[in-house]
Image (cartoon, rainbow, N blue to C red; front, side):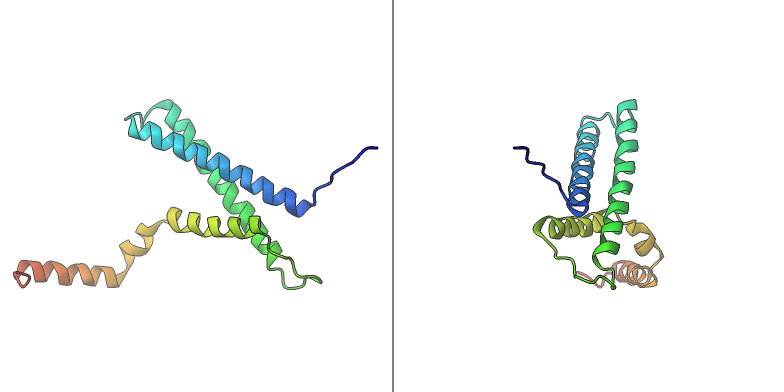
Length: 129
């Protein structure tokens, strides 16, 4: 008797995203190790950073497609979020927070410029003793 196990496309997508995330973590750790050893501008590090950036983009793209699928408003039967999907969505949020280009937001913010101006003037007048 032959037992054929078929996995749904949804599960295949989830596990593919997990594999991509593991590859990203491996490349990020390798980059960190080379940077710690002072070999940041080595040819090997350039290759690792190249692949890390590409894998990060693939992860973001795959998670975006997953979110579009999960929250498609015209599903006849709502999609249940299992543990792996919840974990992936949580990781996606964490990755977006850490990989966001915060310089764009903080560097152009008028509130940050104003607070820097006020702090600089307060320090120069020696109000804080």
